[in-house]
Length: 228
Picture 1 (cartoon, rainbow, N blue to C red):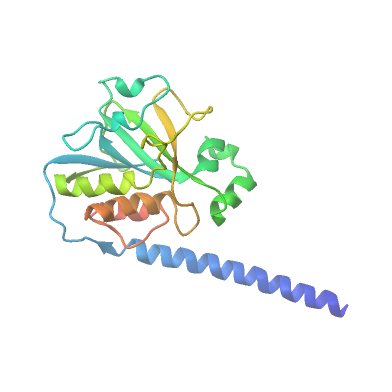
Picture 2 (cartoon, rainbow, N blue to C red):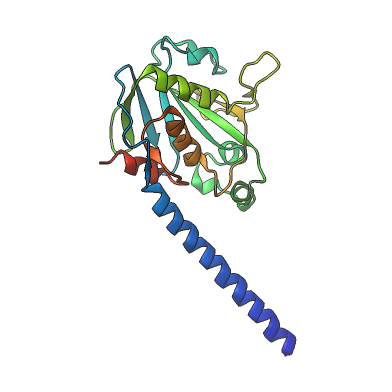
């Protein structure tokens, strides 16, 4: 009986600690996501980029070709669709590799995949998707930047790719596409609850010197900064 009480006491402490951690995590995320960085950045007029969310995950959407970079030379798809001049934009998003490749929909989420993603036990990937056009909405925000800002963002994104022997982003080729206009590439770092897909996207904005959150694991924090 004595040992049973001890075990129950330990279980209660673990449960209490877990809920205290979750509440603290959510509170800190809420506070830090509302604190802006680069609040007074000068708005550029050279290049239009977008931030795009599906409700959980943020992509940074860039013009396929500018005088600074041609993304179609770096992110090429199995069906050579990246060479189609009708595609004007490429959306780039970083995330957990296992989650990306094994969970096309939330209904297919497995505990093992979620556990590895949350605890940083998996590897990362960059998902590239081509679009013919973009339309502004609550889930898609246009941001004008100048060439110097875009150059910094390019450097940030390129530093996230794992490169092959020829110096090109390492394509994940085995059944890794969702459709005919996307592809996956191996990426640096690991996903965790402290560094998520949205943290990476927010980092791209910070690296470019434009308005972003101090820190956020959620898409809501990024879009909050552009809702004013």
